[in-house]
Length: 243
Image (cartoon, rainbow, N blue to C red; front, side):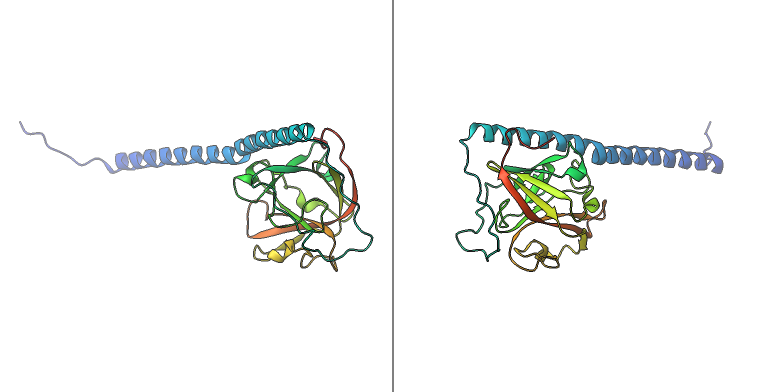
């Protein structure tokens, strides 16, 4: 006896389609939640561990190295950089300083590494190769993530004129004082890290600090810039900076 095939009822087909669509939405939603958790939480955990490791290694090297001579005090009147004072590059990818910003909290302290590559910025702040050394004549320019990978410069927009940024290297502790409110620029405006930064309040050669990060917080269409000027230098205290 032959069986007669009959097409499925429309309501059964609709229920199957709705069930499949719901399962796909649930799967996609789960993947999105996991991705957001990875971006917001896990990258921060890994970055914090990496930064702690860089700081610990840096302090160990300082403790083991012979005492370095303190840097001379800045001259009373700035002069143009010469070949003798041009910055020499640090070893690529290596931490050479710590930075502390009191406005960001007593436990905010980040290592500064040589270079601004993507992998380096997962382990701390990055020094623009070719710009000045800490405390040196010219512009000590530093980059960092605004969000993800520990959010090191999340609050950069909160800095105001008069705030201080402390940088410590093997020999000295440098105090920079913010001179202007944060400025939003296009990524193509690279002159903001020139020896005398373009669009800055500085009229001539000096000893400056530039901090850069992405803007807006969850985008990268622009850059947020903060400029500071060296206002103090003294021998470094043992044990590094707060944090």
